[in-house]
Image 1: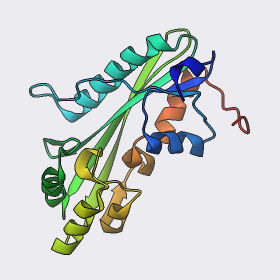
Image 2 (image 1 turned 120 degrees about the vertical axis):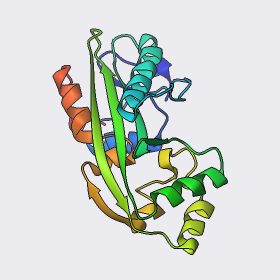
Image 3 (image 1 turned 90 degrees about the vertical axis):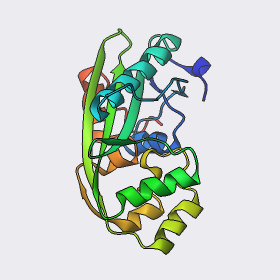
Amino acid sequence: MAGANSRNGELVLGSRSQRRLDLLRQIGIEPVALDAADIDERPQRDEMAPALARRLALTKLAAIAPRHAGCFVLAADTVITVGRRLLGKPADATESRRHLELLSGRRHRVITSVAIQAPDGRRATRDAATLVTFRRLQPDELDALVDGGEWQGKAGSYAIQGMAEAFIKRIDGSYSNVVGLPLQTTLLLLRGLGWRLRIGDR
């Protein structure tokens, strides 16, 4: 789906993430276009996780919204933090293993900031946070997670909807947030900006 297909009042997803697309479809929303922003996602010096997620979501929104006049535009960014340490998308298998070793047997926080612009230019943002606890991973389990390749393009080096779910001991908060888009938060923001669900219009 390309930006040229945008229609007034429809939703544009500011991402090419299949996970986020599937989540929106789960609640009856079919984006008219997928349009990802190419931005620098590196954190600024001393930037905390909530501020980073919010800044990146708003930066994505600012880059994408001008290309889709008359549409709702949704952008989001997910950050994982263990204490004060940020875990972004790993560069390679070696870094993904370091991430997973750090997560093993510990609790971490998944923060997603959602930013939406309405057709009239109004904007709204909100953050969602979920606590996730991994049980201690055995060496062969670490090998399987790394060799399986699910870490590619994933903050924190895992996909909860994949193999990693078998090693998660506890989740406190929104599951969909850990997948990549907190559905309750997203729908509340959309409705606050005037979006109305059109069930069956897919």
